[in-house]
Length: 424
Image (cartoon, rainbow, N blue to C red; front, side):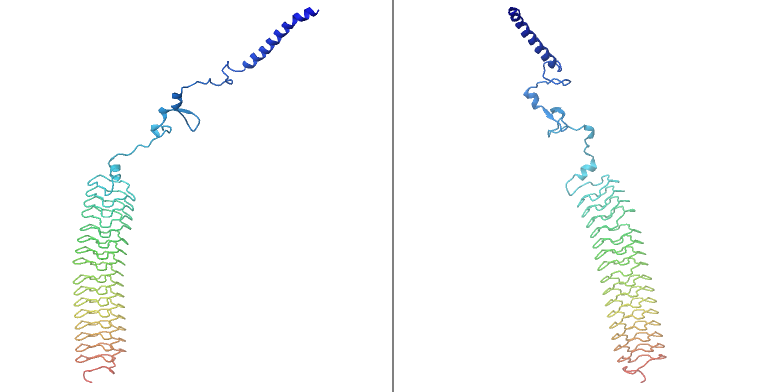
């Protein structure tokens, strides 16, 4: 019995071995072969060190070879997504260092908003319909260029050369044209209100019916310019040269014309109400029917000026020279003529009620039928003046010198205090 049991021991050991082996086989059978890979995974491919150097990991975790990398080591983009660089003539022009040069080139309709075109040479260029809003064209050469319908709103064009440029329907609102050369330009009917034209050369230009309200035109050259019916309301024309300019029918209400030479000008019917003409030269100017009410004419030269039927009510003519001026039927009600010279001036039927003529010189003046009610003539000189039929009711005649004056038919005069009263 013991012998039989001992013979079974190896069998038991062998059986036990095969049971263990079967268990191991079943465990290993859950994978894909003896690769050590979990079920369903690709087998690992062993690469060389050279291959590893040529592999880069994307941020997504994908792998990409060096053929898919750009020069910076970044994944190469699809060429369809890469913007192409514009290498055309316009791009070449804009990429030029300043000052740029493109004479006679075609820039029609191009967007040049806020472009730096300082001292650019654009002579003869086609800029029709171009957008040059707020562009810097300081000292640019735009001679003979076509700027038709271009938008130059807010552009800086100081000292730019615009001689012969085509400016049909161009928008210049808010542009800076100080010192610009616009000689002979056709700006008829243009809206140029509030723009800077100081020192600009506008000689021989056509500005008829142009709106220049509030424009700054200090020291501008307007020699021979056509300003007929132009709106110059509130414009500053201080020291501007208007020699031979035509201002017929122009509206110069509140315009600053101080220091301007308007001698011999035809200003018939011009509106100069409230204008500043201090020290201005208006000698022999034709101001027939002009509106100068409230104007500042302090120290102005109006020698031999034609002021027939002109409206000078409330104007300041203190110290002005009106010698030999024609003020027939003029309205000088409430005006200040203190210290003014009206020697041999024609004031026939002129309205001077409530005017200040203190210390004024009216020697040899014609005051026939003039309205001098409530006028102040304190220390005025009326020697040899013709006062026939004048109304002096309420006038202050203290210390007035009436030597040789014609007082025929004078109304309401109180000569007490007057000097050298004829017939007294």
